[in-house]
Length: 377
Image 1 (cartoon, rainbow, N blue to C red):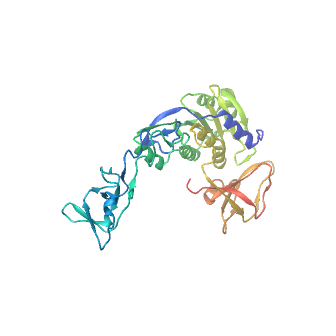
Image 2: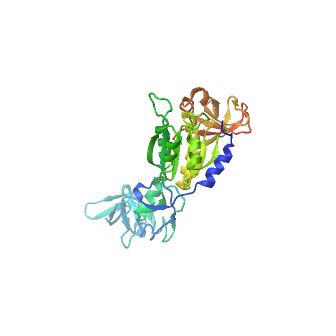
Image 3: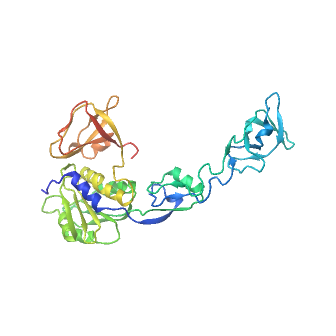
């Protein structure tokens, strides 16, 4: 068996070895989820002049003094749509329901307004040179809307990581149903990566090594052939292709995870072939590396929440364990059958998971724990 390195040591290696990629310009309409590398500033005031905040009629507010249902005030009809600039000599907008056009170019107002009513003033959103969105922001729809209103059509963002996935074919002949490839591809796309190539590789050291050292990717994920058996070759292939920095983790599931880099410096994560172990090796290390490459926060892509254990959660001392849990009564969670017992079904049946650290034997009933929730991912 490979050594059982602490999970924290593997995370530290990823953080030291993997760095944010360079910048490229992306069309704004395709930039959702990308990370800005420079602050976006207003080239001019937004809005550039006073404008209507809603559909209505532009008026000089002082001329509406005394208007009521019993004393309508008659003013010139100047219709505006929301966003239209206020004409000279007007300083307020009367909502449609508070004025009635008479068909002869006039309106009758039944309620007075004051200067500035229903007006978005020049520079209200931003003054010239003001920061609209700071560097490091992961762009969402609201940011894209604001930047579009500022007249921008493209933005500088971190380049999306190019990911090569290698899948070791089974050593024994027979029917092969690859579930790991589609699962990991979906996770890579969730984390902002671009799949450059997915390649099935012969189950031998020479073939795996040759696939590892090919160029054209920012990171390689090699799935399978990571165990201690005589027909498992990924670790030896990586050592020959560059550096096998860490092999074997105190992680359940995921003991046969490996980390290293090729001679060119490209990071490589060896993911176990067992589907549950493959998933958690990806989530803890490969996903973290891809998110760092793309400029995102390195933490999990799951929302976390403090909750109470409804039943005891058990773990083995000396191993970091991923424990699937489901919602209990109120603000509680309870364990479900483990990944060792039911494989990926443990993730499908669960609402989230708890990580029990290496130095713990678990959590007693009633303990407050951090739960990572699957919802939305």
